[in-house]
Amino acid sequence: MTDVLLLADLHGNYGKLDAFPGYDYDAVIIAGDITNFGPLEPVESVLSNFDVPCFAIPGNCDPREIVDVLEHSDAVCLHDSWIALGKITLAGLGGSNATPFGTPFELTEEEIDEELTRIVNRMDKNVHNVLVSHAPPYGVLDGVGENHVGSQSIRKHMTRFDLVCCAHIHEARGVTEVDGVTVVNPGPASDGYGALIHFGKEPKDIQIDLIAV
Image (cartoon, rainbow, N blue to C red; front, side, top):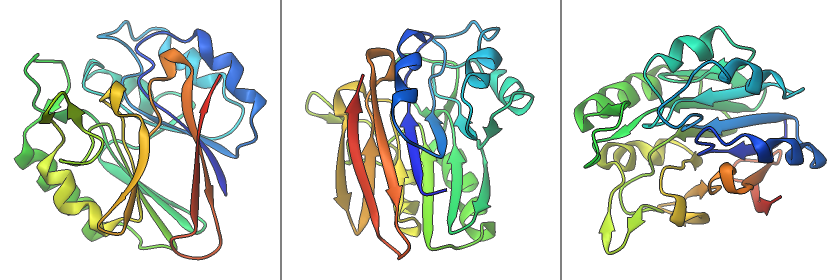
């Protein structure tokens, strides 16, 4: 696996997904908000449309029951877990830190800290170590107006990774590097946005292109 399509923030609008197969990729990562507060019934069939391995986490707008749906789907549920694939280790944490809106899948900073501590202490360290989190790290691609709304706990742990794939803040689409870590928000797939990630043979050799269909 060297080329990955990163999608996020579908929010139940699946019409653009048919356009992404025009790109070359070996796997798909979906960084949460697959639905918009449900319904969950279409999720399995949507994920089964990809003819390459798919890895997914829930977002804060997904009902918590989506974890069971993901675990029984053709996709690999990465929430609160990790998997090593060749030279790449993927770790995942769905939901988000607290929002003012009381969305279905929110975690306290303490819960995020505990789960990430467990993951980073147990996961296989690899050439490329990737965190897939719906919420961004605090202060990184997390601006809403003049406010930063990312997770302090994700920011605390992000230096244990080479790449953080996040979402959540639709207007914060972009790629940046902070503290030696690359962070990407592909933008909302509901609007046809995504990112292509190429993993090279050497550590830190990661190339990212933002795409639109």
